[in-house]
Image (cartoon, rainbow, N blue to C red; front, side, top):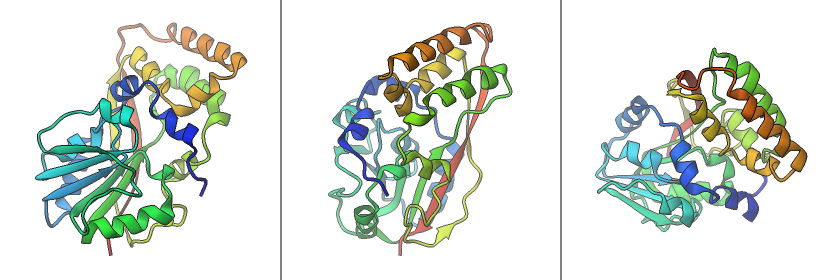
Length: 255
């Protein structure tokens, strides 16, 4: 597994306010499913929380939610709730008490972790039988011309600039790939569904780490700018696009 470089970590601190605003919302039924899978509802731990989107989804179901992220910039844009405690800490060294968590989640980040350190930390922090679940979302899909004329060409232009770690997510967090130490549990087929204008979609796609790296190439920058400009002609500005992003999930009981 390739370790995360300082440059890769810094990517997620750049324009953190834009990143927080552009993140699509996880489905409410997923958080209900997670809560239903827990025998206790005292403490949920959200590793690599970003601005706290997953932590907020968990907050109605647990007395306390501990939300950790190694990026001070991301934590600075946190979403406040009375029962969420935010801390700057890594997923591999949470600082949480032994066997304290009833649920541990990782949203859109498991592919960046150091598994030699992360899995022992989860076994230490979670109580035996606690639920672990990681997820990430797939590419945006739509039946609009926007898929063929904008999303697909955009992805093609930045394809070479994705970090190798991203393939772990695209492959569905296969247990062997992430060295999952617990018995995998079946998970429902959840998807994020949003209604966005083209402007919202562009804002989201320009938060992608590969897009930021691609813009270091002047030729690609010009091509990307031209593609984004031409997308305005595909649909009326006020049209709302129906988009779906299937979730890739990995769950298990901490042994």
